[in-house]
Amino acid sequence: MSGNSGRRGIWGAITRWAASDQEVEAEELRDDAREAGCQPLANVDDRTTVRVRGVLQSVTLQPRLGTPALEADLFDGSGSVTLVWLGRRRIAGISCGRRLVATGRVATFDGRRVMYNPRYELLPAGLE
Image 1 (cartoon, rainbow, N blue to C red):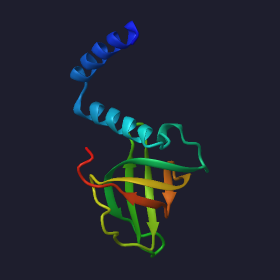
Image 2: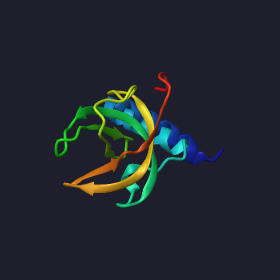
Image 3: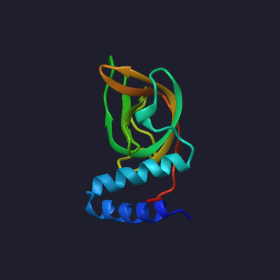
Image 4: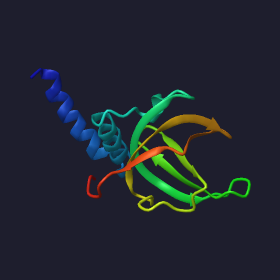
């Protein structure tokens, strides 16, 4: 074990102590996604197919041209993407605070990052 890791451990503990709850949660989400082999949203290029992991921060029904569309904002600690399921009013298990893994192609639409009709895997509750 190098001398740096000890200092980093102490510095990390001090940094976490001084950080806000949101900063600590974001760090935990980034670590969780990295350990699961998922790409950080901050590093995802437009029009690429990716696998991301995070927590749903909001879930809304947004009709698009008369067709229902369920939208959920997924945050992974580094960035966010709006997951859009066209033709769906609701999906069992998709709710605020739920953690999941989503796979699909990221695009930018109206200045925000979106993933249309992604494949998803709901993660068991209690992974916090």
